[in-house]
Length: 147
Image 1: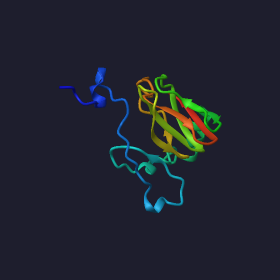
Image 2: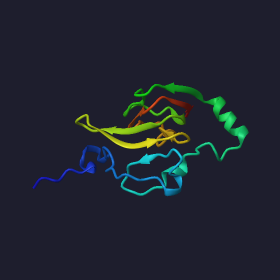
Image 3: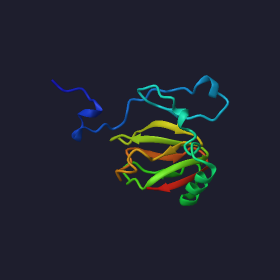
C-alpha cells in the first residue's frame, strides 16, 4: 500500500510548507494596516507589528543607525528560499508577501506582512537558510539588521 503524501514523509523529514488557513485581523484592528498570516493555528499576528516599539526612542535610533535602509520596488524579491540568513528585515513602509516554492515550482503564500513587522528571523542566530521567500507587494522601505 502506498503511503499518502504528507510533508513529513519527504527525505529528511522536513516539511515543504505548512497547510494554509487564513487568519483574519481582529475586529478592533479593522482600520489599521494589518498582516494576514496563513497557518494551521490561530495566532494574534498583529501583536508583532510594533517590533521596535518596546525599545526607548534612543534605542530605536541606535538600531536604525546599525541597520541599513533599503528600498524595494513592487514585485522585487527581498530574499529567496534557500539563501543563507544574514539578518532580519524590518518593514518600515509597504507590504511584503512570504511564500514557499514547492517541488513543482508552485508558490504557496504563507503571509502578507505590514509595516512594523519583521521578516527573515527564524534562523538568524543559527545562520540557517531561509525556508521561504519574500517579495515586495508594493514599493517598500525596509531596515536590514545584520545578524
